[in-house]
Image (cartoon, helix red, strand yellow):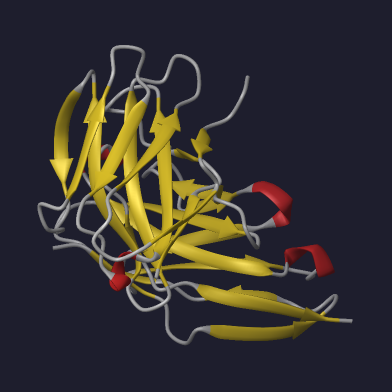
Amino acid sequence: AQSVTQLGSHVSVSEGALVLLRCNYSSSVPPYLFWYVQYPNQGLQLLLKYTSAATLVKGINGFEAEFKKSETSFHLTKPSAHMSDAAEYFCAVSDKGGSEKLVFGKGMKLTVNP
Amino acid sequence: KAGVTQTPRYLIKTRGQQVTLSCSPISGHRSVSWYQQTPGQGLQFLFEYFSETQRNKGNFPGRFSGRQFSNSRSEMNVSTLELGDSALYLCASRPNAGSNEQFFGPGTRLTVL
């Protein structure tokens, strides 16, 4: 069975600092990996996705993630945090080309301090 | 293009009642999935419908059911509500069952008293 681990539930950074949100996956088949963001009282918005084309994936709002098979990781980064990045971030995995259900991690709440 | 819409946005019910939630996918999308989000269990897959047929189902009791209409709109029903059913219910659509990107609606916040 596939699974995703996001260690911790909350991270706090200063505005302008590096954002690093960790995600490790477990999958018996080549995974399709996703990062979603959820702002308060809203649904999920796709930030970026890994579909085996390139290991370094660039997404919206300046975020990117690198797929590392040897480490079974897909960490999300942004060089410089902005106040508007404060939200909850979810890593998710799917198989069969991403056509199956999404299995989500527990989520990570990002706080950005001025 | 309009996004995924869900109605109602907020709902309060009492234990034992039943509830129906509605989801209208993005125009042209034929696949609709439902997820339950709670603080304790996080985001969990309920079921997916494609062309009016359920193609995948999560690990939820039979009280949770759904259906999809010919216009791709979907409804989910929860019968005999329990306090633990309080959650944000998210609907997601994609063009077809093979698409790897899902587009989420804003959710319906269900509170069971």
